[in-house]
Length: 263
Length: 354
Image 1 (cartoon, each protein chain N blue to C red):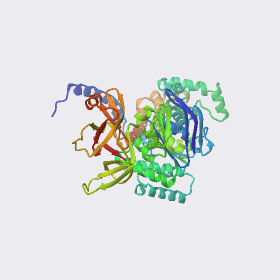
Image 2 (cartoon, rainbow over the protein chains, first blue to last red; image 1 turned 180 degrees about the vertical axis):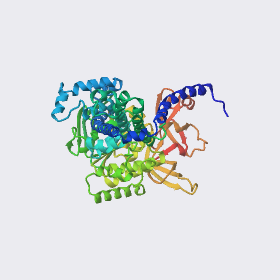
Image 3 (cartoon, one colour; image 1 turned 60 degrees about the vertical axis):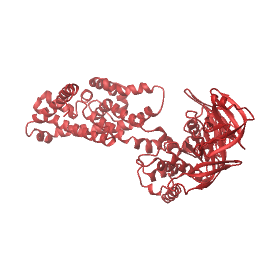
């Protein structure tokens, strides 16, 4: 057998630390839940409600994000317009803003003291301390994932394919739905799942705008600070399992998209 | 059918300069030019995918300058086929038949598939099809909505040579059959010769010559056109006497080519009307009867001598004018001048027939 080079030895060792560092907490979590803890947590209606609320709000956030974000992504991919770079940068901005800060910012806009909140309250939507607030916070922190994935997907579609559709009698809107969207469906789908997953795991901005009703992450934090680790752990485990499931789904889609490139 | 009036376009460093062009109904019109000359841009302007900075586009007697492509009644085929990869062959062809009844769509697809010999492919996925197959499907898709005008952007350049000749023949037959106004852009002068009723040569965003292909090739208006076309000796004639006995398994045969007083031994694929092209550097000039094995030996008078750098270009009259290229050294050794008689010889394989 060929002797591995020094590089392979050193880099493998360093890499092993990373793998261990990522894996150990998750595994430890699995083994630390006391017997019956998981079943107990699942039987707890507060836990069930929190998880349903989280998944539901994340789904709403993703749907609204897709409705509003995918058209923007298409414009960013296809049109040269004044301020395109600015908007592209703006879309990325929530990634670098600390999430509690994002929550406070949303609170200012959607609170009753400001036009945004007052406008929506006329429509019967209250944000602060209510479900629309959760959805808004989720959209704010996760929409960039969907927009960027969609934009990259659209960029990979040869614009001349759209040109051909135009000469075959398709208006720009029809071309979008019959050519651009189907051809970037994998990017759109994986972008949507990434957005959904990011929305499920959001805590910092939600806790500022809507503490009650509690989403799963807020519930975990609440149990941890009120009752301690033992009570927070089973709920945390459920959330982790959901996240892993979503993650596996995403990897599956990436694999389907490009078996060679996916790692 | 298509009329461009002073069409100009400026995109960055690239520009089209007041293009004026008229393509007649039913005509096969070829725009010939090197890569980057603006051929594709011109097609996209006619299709409505690009809007000219100034000028007018007329199709079928209507000013369509402001109209979007979906309301222009043109079909467009790009060089790399660009089939929709998410649709099967049948759906690709049916793409432009939106709004027709299912029965009508089926009939249309069936007749196009028969015409283009792709019936066996209709239920296939796009990936995995050969370039020639994809090209036929793209053509079927462009033809399906029965547009008044067909725009072809280098339709043959993505194919390998045998396929290219075949599809070229088919394009010609198809045009004869459908009599569709066709605008075809290419950088290949052979394509233009074989297919075109008229040719326009485009250079750096400007049309430099328009005319029937033979005239453009015989009488290039500028050195650019002459050099771009690149062949000094071009004859239109007839191939006869294909000798198929010698090499029954080959696809090419020894044959005769005749164009007026000129008779040549050639290597050809088939009999019938054809062009023969001989590059001037393939012709060997000598004062004495050559003993070479070359099949074609001609005798003629030098009528013109032109020195260009290290090369000398001779025109000899051998019944028709024939151009030969010599180095300055061999020219001096031969001691040729206008009026001198000389022998010309070249191999049968040096003649390109198409």
